[in-house]
Image (tube, rainbow, N blue to C red; front, top):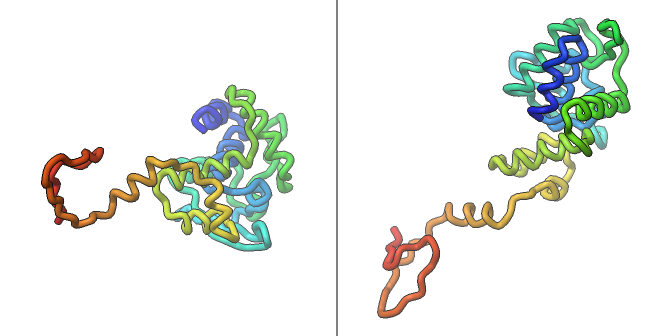
Length: 202
C-alpha cells in the first residue's frame, strides 16, 4: 500500500488524487470494486469518515468507515473533484479534466494495474486489497463479527476463510485465561515452557 499510494502522491495531476482515494478505500474500507464505483458524494460524511454502501453484494446495505490515511486521501480527492452531487469517482482525461460520469469496475482494474506497474508491485487485483483489509483487521485483534459486518459478508464463516493467524495467536489467546491451580511438587516434575517451577495460581 505504501508503494501504491506513493506513486499516486507523486502524480500531481487530478488522477493522482483520485487514484490515491480509490486505492485507500479499496483497502482502508474493504470495498469491492463494484461498491467503490457505486459510491456517490452524498454517501460520504467527511467529518466522521462514514461511508454508506448501498446495494452491496446480495443487495445488502452497510456502513463502513474511511479513517486516518483513507480519510485524508478522500478529502484530498474531494478538494479536486468538488463536492457537488454525483458519482464519487469519475474519469480524469489526459488533460486533467475531471469527467462527470461514473467510473466502471473495469476502469478500477485498469487504474490498479497501472499503479501497480508504476510501483513495482506484481500480481495485484482489487480483491487482494479487500482480502488484505480483512486479514489485517483480524491480525490486529479486531472481533471477527465486527470484521464480518464491515466486509458485508452474509456469514461469519466467509470472513473466517481470510483468517491467516496461526498457532501462536491461538496460544496467546489461551494465555488470557488464568487457571488457579496450586502446584504440588513432590519430587521430580516436568518443566512446562513459560511456567516457573512451583508456580502458584491466584
